[in-house]
Image (tube, rainbow, N blue to C red):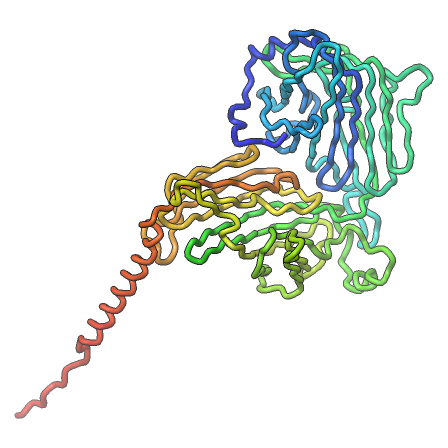
Length: 493
């Protein structure tokens, strides 16, 4: 789902979990598809369920089972879709061990089937194998999961699990269990880059909820781990640290965005030495080594202008900026080329900045011109790239008051501080929003409301005028002071 700032209200107690009736629903059919990738893995699970009891409560959907990796809370993005509706307010039950279920209030009569879809983005579930390769070698990744069958608190009549490789080829895979496969059927089928497990029939509930509210493995049921070895013909890009600085200027009618990026190629590391000659020769081959980052396509918001791009050495001129189409609109595109090719295990740090018209991102509340609503994009999404540590720092104009922040998903921390710079008297309000493990879906807007009274608007003018007046008075006084050494009269003897 789309995580809301109201996620703090998403709480569950052991009392609520004890009321769960595992016989209230039945999974008529489950179809899960893994789209294997580099730093991210997209998972789509289609549930067709049937309510068995008229007075049954909500459907308890398992997000993380007892065999899942002990990952940091919130590292995986998920949302539940039913038709064209995205459930954006769901009750989540979280155990102390991080395993989670979500309650879906299905409005359906008994014995009437209904369908909904769980969309997930898993991060860092694939790793390079072999871990080191030559400069021109093929890059292979290994996807690993502790489960094969879909975790559920209810029995399932029919279930199918698919794995799709982006290279349309699978090198090898572990052998799945043939339990719950019909007699004479095959536990798996491989066609090109697609591996299909099942269909499985009459699968019992895989997990249950204990008295303490945590998920436990159903007695007698055993999950089989799954490994998929597949080629990946693109660099595995990870941004270890992203710091976005957003500064608001009412007088300049400008919103400046500046991204400080630490980009790491987390694919197969380079074996041996880098050869510039082989790198230049590869440009004339039909296929270029996939694991090398040569350039970065950085999409900017529509109507962005005045971009800049530099690293620790200085300005980098190997970039190309394509502004938004004045008729069709759309994002502006900034094509970046690092100072050197980024191979597996290498890192590049750089800064990207641009300006935008403040009027497109700041609105006044109707009936109160002093109350403002600011919209700031949390991050710039790069396809398939995971941001391990993201930080958005918003600096409001001096004099802004009653600051409130609304974030469209769960974050790790929201901090308020005061930033002082030149010609500031009381300092500027600053908001810092932190979140770990961000993916493309987190490219959403953060909303900041604040009041900016008229006296705050002229406060800068008064400060500048006062400082200028003090400087003029100081200069005038200095000119009227005689600081020369007086001439000593000669001594007459």
